[in-house]
Length: 244
Ligand code: BJW
Ligand code: ZN
Image (cartoon, rainbow, N blue to C red):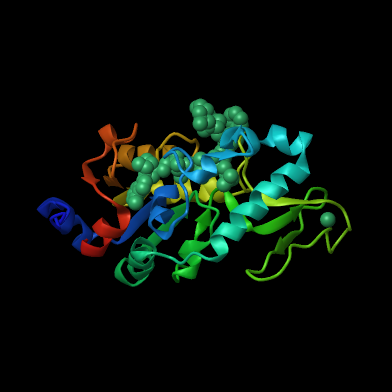
């Protein structure tokens, strides 16, 4: 039987956690991995769709070329998500709202699992698979967990697209600006379950570090951000955050 080992958390990090007020948390696909959501770059099922790599199907160029294919990919993703639940990491992060006076949760995930765990005011840098947006008037439509998605815009009747940020597209107006401003004045920054490859999201820990924050990464693997971090906790988000 595999021995149960507790992740190592330094006394310095514990001191910082106890003292911090302004905390920025950046999450990526790895935070949802223990719920069963495939990561993009971890060799999971969603890395390819009908033979296409995810960065081809999840791209602005594909949306221009073949919107129905992009919808099909997101319809499939929502079907997978429907059956999944938030995990210990989502719940731990949600509980931090009571722990830190100034918590900012910024996620790259489009799965809505942070909100389902009770996190409020989540900054969704890459949008949500649970919304559709009009390609003409930008009116946003919620897609309910059990309902079918709307076919056309309720406001102007035009074509809808997933309300997500695909490669080569701009982030939602104001979202990255707000996150960068919070990164520049946090004392503690957690980078959890992201490969740190996609910008501008990956610039948030860089900004926090330059502004003097203590930066801590939680990931089973090293990433391009590991070297700038003050502490790297090697482990799964659910295991690490449960004991932090
Ligand atoms: C665990 C775990 C466990 C496993 N516990 N961890 C600067 C330099 C170069 C390029 C650019 C740049 N600025 C912008 C760009 C272009 C581009 C970009 O960054 N490209 C790079 C890849 C090179 N960025 C953009 O296009 C962005 N737009 C933009 O900047 O507009 C202006 C502009 C346009 C064009 C040129 C220049 C400027 C938009 C990016 C949108 C990203 N969209 C996607 C798809 C969303 C829709 C969908 O869901 O399909 O977002 S791509 C995909 O990657 C998805 C994710 O949110 C994103 C990040 O991935 P994430 O979350 O890090 O997941 P993984 O799978 O990569 O990593 C998982 C990690 O978890 C791993 O490290 C595991 O070890 C770990 N893990 N189990 C903890 N249990
Ligand atoms: Zn419309």
